[in-house]
Image 1 (cartoon, chains in turn yellow, orange):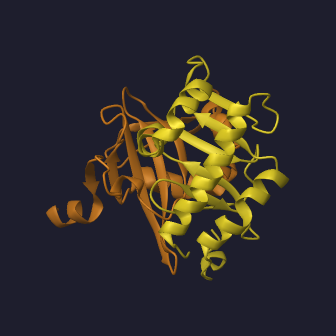
Image 2 (image 1 turned 45 degrees about the horizontal axis):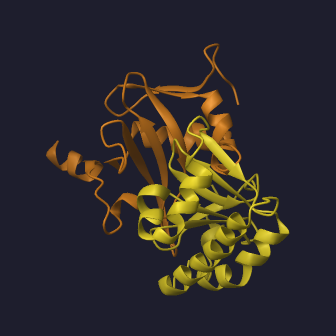
Length: 140
Length: 128
C-alpha cells in the first residue's frame, strides 16, 4: 500500500469548499443509496482506482483520488446518523431512496431527474456538507 | 480475481476459527463505490489480516446481533491511523463479508455511537 501519498497534510475543509460543487458537476456525480450497508454515496458512477477514504466529521467521509482531488462523499450509517441529525433531508430521502424496498442499491442522477425536489435536495446536500466541513476544520 | 467453483473470492477462518466467506457476486456489487475491493492484494492482504488478526471488533450500530465490524490497524501517519474495516454478517455460519474499505477512523467510536466494542486485541493479549 502507498504510504507516501499520505505524508503531506491537506486542508480537506478547503478542498470541500472549493471543489465539491464543481467536481460534482464536472464528473456528473450521482446519489447512490446502498440499503444493505446503510451507506449513501455522492460520487461519480465509479470511484477511481487508488482513491483513499478520509473522515471529515464522523457523519461523512470523502474519497480523494491519486491527485488528491475530491472524488466522492460517503455517509456511513446514513439513515441512523446523518439523516437522523438532519431532519430537513428525511422526507425527500425516504421518498426517493427508501420507497422501493425491492432495490438493494438505488441510484439517482440529480442532473437528469425531472423532479425539482431532487435538484433542491442536491443543492441543500452540497451546502450542508460544505458547512459541516467548515465546522470540522479538519486537516489531513 | 480468482474464485472458487462455489463463487467465493475468499474462504478463510477468523481469529476464533469460524469460517468467513466473501461471495464474488457481493464483491462485484460493491466495486463501483469501493475501489479498495478491486485490489487483489488488499483482499488477500489487509482484509484477510483484519479477519484473522483483528485489532478491534464492534457490534454494528444498526444490527448489533447480525453484523460485526472488524478493524485491522495498518499504520500511523501524520493523518492519523489507517485501518482496514470489514463488515461481516454473523447471523449464520459461515459468516459472510458484506463490504470492506480503508478508513482513517473508527466510526463506532464517534460521540453518540451506541455501538459496543466486543474485542480488543491488546486486552485479549494481556489476559493471555
